[in-house]
Amino acid sequence: MKAVLCHRPGVLDIVERPSPGIPAPGWVRLAVSHVGICGTDYHIFEGKHPFLEYPRVMGHEISATVLEGGDGVAIPAGTPVIVNPYLSCGSCVACLKDKPNCCTNIKVLGVHTDGAFCEEITVPAGNLYPAKGLGLEAAATVEFLAIGAHAVRRSMAPAGSRALVIGAGPIGLGAAIFSRIAGYDVTLLDTSPERLQMAAEVLGFTSGIVANNNTIGAVKTKTNGDGFDVVFDATGFGPSMEQAFNFVAHGGALVLVSVVKDDIRFSDPEFHKREMMVIGSRNATRADFEHVADSIAKGLVPVDKLITHRTTLADAPRDLARWAHEKTGLIKAVIKVAA
Ligand SMILES: [Zn+2]
Ligand SMILES: [Zn+2]
Image (cartoon, rainbow, N blue to C red; front, side, top):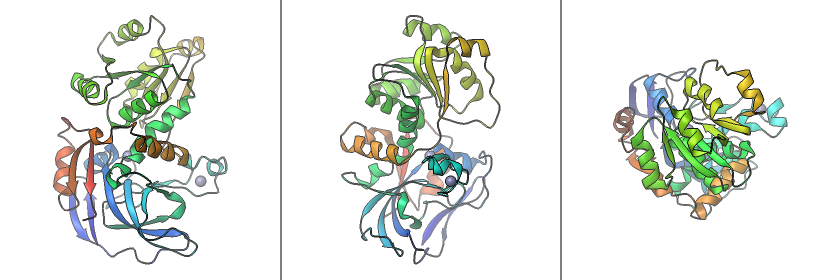
């Protein structure tokens, strides 16, 4: 089978690899249909991922069709599925709390182990969800949207909350879309006026703040001096995460969606006087995948507007290398793998 292999930072090409063959008991062999290109994939390509070992087949935003199940698997061949790419151990302290998204032994397809920029993969049957009512291209967007949906669920904020989403990239837009679905009043904050304009025109997020040296003033103006009930940071940028503490209303919550490989600092009096909740949000769970798939099926997520770029497996090495630095107009790129 064909696979796109990242040999080392900056070097991608198509290679021939053996098919994964008959799946182990409880596992399923899949024909990959579509696979999204994530910020993580660009980082791996550019050598910016903190703990990745090369060579690596990337790809964790996956839709597929079942080819065959191993012993004990009852899913018929031909079933269209969404793949949860987080392989959890089932027995650690997090898994036993029903939080496999933060398993201590987690392996993410395309990061810790080879992923889906290829024609066939095998995964545990428990990592599959039926793509009922969804096209297979739309089904490949469920994973990245589930990250935002999970962050919204983690915030525990009620409908009517005023929400600020910092960072209008794909993950931030996912958090914004699922904030809107949860009934929040959403404002986006980004350094790029173009990105905010695109979010307004394409997705209807007309309340935006361009980050500048008076961002705190703009936040106050938007909220009658209160700050936001819930703030999501999806920037992956330490100074932004630190500043975000100042945007939270008294009694509100800060959800850190993206991660930085660094310490972050905050003022304890500012944090304490608000009785603020600071919440980490990592990956997503079954409930999030199902909520996203249902929301897409109900027409609540404009998937066709989120997918701005398309390519094929054969052209992916060239296109991914280009899109790693040409981001204008790009929200989500998807590779069509199946013919
Ligand atoms: Zn991703
Ligand atoms: Zn575990």
